[in-house]
Amino acid sequence: IIGTGEIAPIADAIAMIETQIDFIAAGIGNIHGRYPANWQGLNLPHLQKLTTTLDAITNHQVPFVLHGGSGVPDDQIKTAIRLGVAKVNVNTEAQLAFHQALREFILTDQDLIGKNYDPRKLLAPGVTAIEASLADRLAVFGAPFKN
Image (tube, rainbow, N blue to C red; front, side):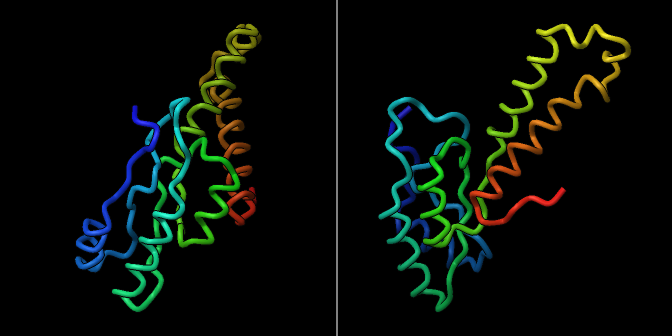
């Protein structure tokens, strides 16, 4: 995988915004799934160019969606939010938290105790791990999680 991620051409972003969409998910160096070791980070100057260009065309701030937000460093996420990102997708992060918690539960033989084979008990550590992962991400995004 190329370490620069996906970069949306300005012309493509303009074409999309001209369809009167409510949000735009333009590539700014992001990647779906896990990031490779050679990933260079979000291209925040490109996000600034996109924001400036699209805001001028629409005469209002265009909200951006960041696909592939899992694993992006917190400082880059916070800067991206300041530059117009209104939604950050972190599904991979939630999936990995669930997987790790479930794996630990099974590998420590907790699934063999009592009725822990019951899917509600077996999957509970994974659900709790997703909640904790998302609470952490929402705090970084500036929207604390309330359970």
